[in-house]
Image 1: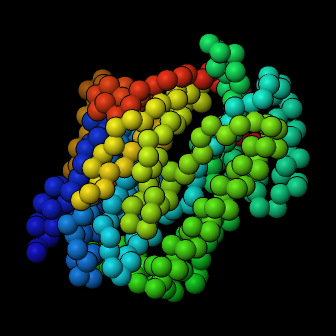
Image 2: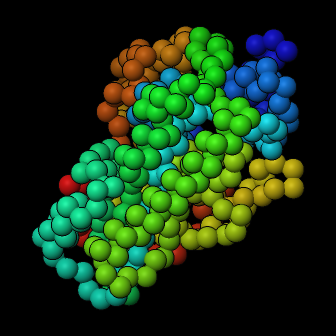
Amino acid sequence: MNKCDYYSLAIKKFIDFSSNDPTSSIAKEHGIIGLTRLLMCMDSLNLDLEETLFVAMPDFTYTRNPSRWEAGFPYGCIISLGKTSPLFIPIDFRPNCCGVILVKLSGDARDADYYVKRYKELLCKKQEINKTDFNRRNHFFGVYLDIQNKEYYGLIHGSFSFAKEQLYVEKNLILGENANTFEAIGSKITYLFGDSAERYYEQYLQLEKKTAHLREEIAEFLFPHSDIVFHKIHEGFLNNNVILLGAYADINSFSCPIMLSAESSLPLVNIEVAIDLMKGEKIFCAPHGGGYSLMNVRSASRVSGNEYILEYTNGSKMITDNIIDLPFQYRGNVINVWCNQYKKGHACKELFPLFNFKI
């Protein structure tokens, strides 16, 4: 196949459950090029392309991680590579075991100073927690109130530096030595194949288990005797052939919080309708959050390469190749898109944010 054939195939493999706003349009154009590269790379290794799929979720957007974005991976999506043999893993999507745990408190919430003091005590006790783990980007912990039932909840969102140090190619020299690269359409894909991919996936599973255990330890320390309501990762693997890039997924139905902006209420959503991922396989899935939306932009399209032209609500225009640094806000419509437009579930509870902490 030539490049145009791969691009046409990528369009057919792109499943669009996005919000269809200007920001998701940018992510879609960028993601289809990234998927084209991925298909070209897989074909060069004689891997079957039939079950490769790219699923854009309602929070589909650009990523503020430059390495991930430059490799053609937007955020708010699920990528199925099919059951490749030997195992193939593109590591530019940068899995880091990031997850969310939501717990129901056994009683009333304490005051904000208590949680700040308690967390600082925890930093002294736990060497595995870096002091920046829960105060960079949108990572934090918080306390919420179900006003209707007068019940309190605690939430922890984030991953840990030790996971990134082992899973990111630029931080792990041994990983870099085992990785291969494939040049396509002005960029490259970094990937593992065969035994090195198997070892990476096993290492990932160990780190996912360790980070999950640590989030639960933090939850118990901050919110003693609480009950876990939800705990899943959204940046990693569902299994060795399904990539989660800002999405929750499971083979069974589940309920999850969907992360919007810090001042917004936290909706709990029951996910009840599965999507078809590949032959004979269905998964239940949900957006992790609202996703970034470029502020005051009413249309966007690619000019060439990584350059885009944006038209603002006042009619002015900008041409830029630096989407990542433009002002953004978090979408607030993803619940409506996923539950009402695409009919994949329904909101069952709304939690009001009392305190959020990035310390």
